[in-house]
Amino acid sequence: MTDPAEVAALARAFAVHLEHLREYRGVHFVGEGPTPSAEGDVSGADVSGADELGAGESVVDDPGEGDRGVGVPGAGEPGAAAPGRAQPWGEAAEPGPSWGAEQGGAAAADDDGAGAAYREEAARARAQRAEAAQAEAARAQAEAARAQAAQAEAARAQAAQAEAARAEAARAQAARAEAPPAPNSAPNPATEAKAPARARAADWPAAKKLAYLRERNVGDCQRCPLARTRRNIVFGVGNPEADLMFIGEAPGGEEDRLGEPFVGPAGRRLDAWLDLLGLRRADVYIANVLKCRPPGNRDPQPMEIERCSPFLHAQIRAIEPKVIVALGRYAGCLLLQRDLKLYEMRRSVQQYREPKSGAEIPLMVTYHPSYVLRQDRRGHPGHRGGGPPPQSNRPAWINPEDEKVLADLERALALLRR
Ligand code: SF4
Image (cartoon, rainbow, N blue to C red):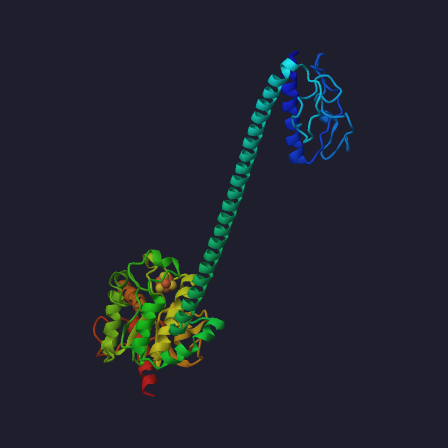
């Protein structure tokens, strides 16, 4: 690049650039590099002097007379700026010889054109930067607003959760307050809260207590595996105000099908005994230890008895019979809370102790009708076990085990009459 005009235009453009740098960085880029020669080859000349500068540094604090800094032709140097032209750093150019009279006007025009273009470009860049900064600020503001909204939403969700928990606790408390006397269970703080409801329920008639127990406590009970194989829950049947209560072991096939205790062959035998004693089924109350049928009429498992027996104790509390007759060994053992042989329990009148109140009720333990029916099929082996001799007025179907049961039942009735 040897055209002085070109060089001058470039130098001026660069000076403008430096002015902008100074404007934005606050640095005085007053060059001290070699001044480009109007005549010599200035390619490769350092026209800025800025390469050696750090931000904020000033290489010349007070440019001296004749020193015009950045490689711009100055006074006393060949290629001085056109007279009367303002220099980029704000000082008026001194009048003096130019690079050439014939080139001076053209160079100034080029300089003006380049400077204006550069300023325009710089202004555009400034505007773009300002725009970008504005956009960035808007983005940050939007982001902050989103974070604030998310925070508010989380707070709302937390409040709703707390409200739901409070409502649930209030519902549970209300339900506890309405709860009926529960099946036999250990006292605990929750039980204490039921005290007023229990007090109210204590005044209910037995029928209402039983209905509540069946609907609200037993319901669709799933407390033991028998729930999976049963067809019906066999709760109990008879007179809720009965003085005499019969308690068997568990429902059989017919009972499971019909949902009523003692309705199969064993039930018919029980009805026959009652008939012989001048009683009807409607005079007594009949229930079982288990409310669901064990598959294949197998023996009840201890776990099943443990889960189900609270319902039976609650039934006894509701009915408050004067005498209880346990039919079979399982019922006798449960009511006595002891593991005894049937003949041991039959020897005398036992006492059932109600687990919650401690109240005692006389208890007779006798054979289960199913057992007596099995003796029918085996034939009458005679009066085993020292039972009473058959009475002449007994029906022909009576077998010796029937006689034993009838004798036990008569003792129970005698207890009632006391
Ligand atoms: S046997 Fe008793 S505890 Fe088991 S499911 Fe039936 S009602 Fe519930």
